[in-house]
Length: 165
Image 1 (spheres, rainbow, N blue to C red):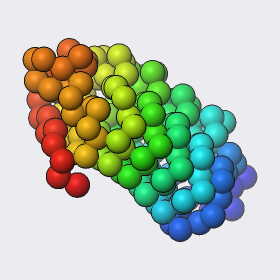
Image 2 (cartoon, one colour; image 1 turned 90 degrees about the vertical axis):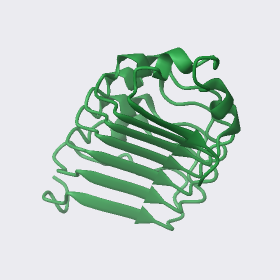
Image 3 (cartoon, helix red, strand yellow; image 1 turned 120 degrees about the horizontal axis):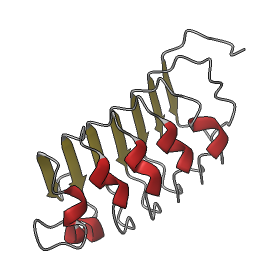
Image 4 (spheres, rainbow, N blue to C red; image 1 turned 180 degrees about the vertical axis):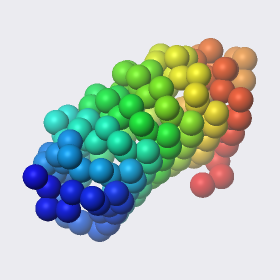
């Protein structure tokens, strides 16, 4: 039983964890989780994040050593907004992102090593807005009609790509 079972918002800022705690219990009612300024975090464990099935907004910001996101992220069936900002070592997004059927906003900024968007984005018919900023590889791959990843995102009604963040 979690210590605060009715907790619906959690902001983890400026902590010194190397790994995000895996103790997120399914009974948590979190709707918003922000992980910010966690310089030493290297990865988010599979077994924790996927338990947050009521989560509507996930923001991962200013985590300079974060190299990957877990496939467990793809279990967040209620997730509507995913914000990933300043994670310069992040190299890829989970392939199972096509399971995020409620996702409406995806914002990715300042992730210069992010090399592509996953195939699963094609399946996200609820995704209304995609913002990519200061991600030079993604910027090139997602160029309208000519980029290698354009076909994965062409169905999204509102796409903004540029160096604005």
